[in-house]
Length: 244
Image 1 (cartoon, rainbow, N blue to C red):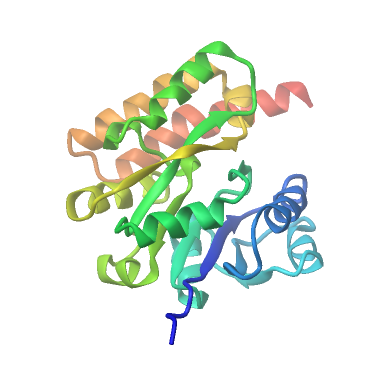
Image 2: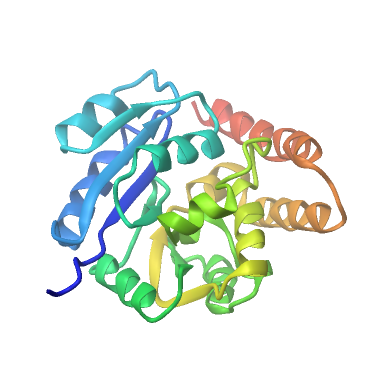
């Protein structure tokens, strides 16, 4: 009797994503197979817009959570029934046929990994930064590249560290690099450059580099959060207010 094929649960943390989420959910359904993708779980951190209505309209599962991507993604994993978890941001589009590509990697012995990344902009410097996502080194990793991992391994490793309100993706991937054969798949997700537009691409890239540096020199989640809030969140809000 042939073995039952593996299935994927897609987990998307969301918060006030009514402008983008419907397009992503439609794209996923058109770019994957229902035989391979068991479910799409959108974990809402308390949206005040129509995000939850959009989730239900597209036939995805809506799970309510406390705000915080680590908490949201861990809760999504608890609800997941698939053999493989695929964590995806609401403004990131995986390549067509991503589900089969992920399962092929799993069958070839790679229990966890990600895709390369491109931005949805022609800005040459952002494309230059994105080029490094093909390099299989922890310094080149980030949550925008998405993350696949076998459900059993996710449980074994404890999932995302909920003390991190930012940098939770990278902190988890760092642990995976130490204990697994992390795979960078030779296809690209397309992710939004909207935060770079809000903050400024050079400024944001500098501050992301500083967060990496602070982490590698021993800064904990609270210090990283304070730095992010002061230098990125505040700048983004200031930019939005000026353009309003």
